[in-house]
Length: 141
Length: 126
Image 1 (tube, each protein chain N blue to C red):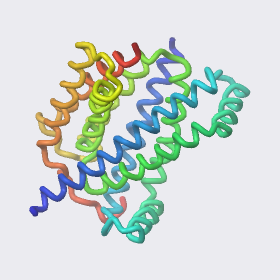
Image 2: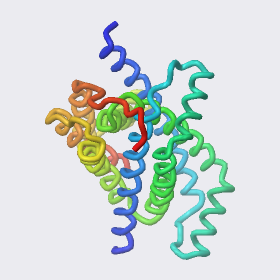
Image 3: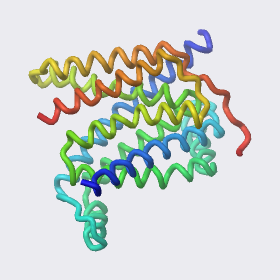
Image 4: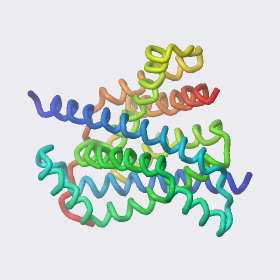
């Protein structure tokens, strides 16, 4: 297997893991914040919000998935370009729509389909470029 | 409204700045030798000893917390396009700070993804 093909496959695998962790994390985060309610911007308000997030199990589960996402992201950018990994991760939004339609039988309107087509086309365009255009930097600045 | 604008700019700066610092640091760390648990642990330990990764963590933490505040303050119709705009800001950062070669094809892809994400998520809120 050529070096470039191997690079593409392992980047794709890491991006898929990122997508799963990020989507689950975001979903749980939104649920947790709905449980907490609107955050007031004042010292007591922010303190109250901080304590509420610390004591909320859903937020902790969300943080766990978002940590998983961060680790996958760190691994992916250790070999691939940031401008390659970042848009490729948006494929998750298109996947969510397809799953909503196939599994949940949700109606998907034209605007959303246009969005999905744009994301998939955009990711395919980015995917055709070389995953890594910089050399690893061994020395620190 | 000004408060919301300041928080949106703060969120975008922290999010993009954090991701760029993280990428810079991870390029110094290098990729894991393999995906075995021992190699992955060594990889994480090496990443945790990199200064740029430590610069990125507070920025990403601040972006996470500002996103929580934005989600509790503003409708998704404002928060989503702002976070989708991160794709464009991030690509500028990749080109000028990380010196990545961003071809026309990659730029077109990024802009399409940015518009697409906004369309999908704005429909999702309904």
